[in-house]
Amino acid sequence: QVQFVESGGGLVQPGGSLRLSCAASGRTFSNYAMDWFRQAPGKQRELVARIHSGGSTNYPDSVKGRFTISRDNAKNTVYLQMNSLKPEDTAVYYCNTYPPYPYWGQGTQVTVSS
Image (cartoon, rainbow, N blue to C red; front, top):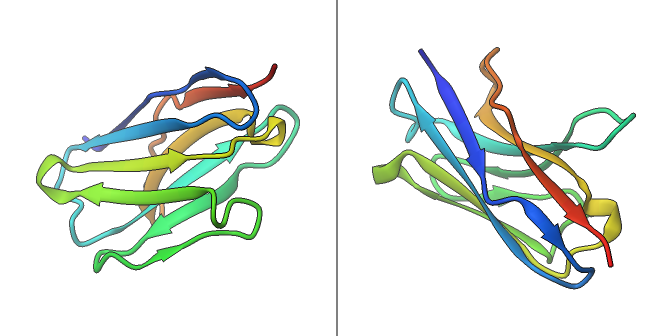
């Protein structure tokens, strides 16, 4: 069964950094594009980063230059390095493949506040 386990969230001050991890299991994901999403209270889930199987990446303007997605195929793990965090980055962060599996992990809470 496919599973995604996100970790690394927490409370951080504006301008701070966090590194999120997503451990995937149930199959090998090296041939899949992988996504990081976030969902803030009362808002729709939004894509914040994508890494393709070949290593190319995509970001929306809201996080471009601040977030970096990477992957370690040997560990079936995807990372999200988040720098210069802002209060509007506060959300629960999730990972999935692209296209997404119907299974979502529990996510990891990121709170940016002074």
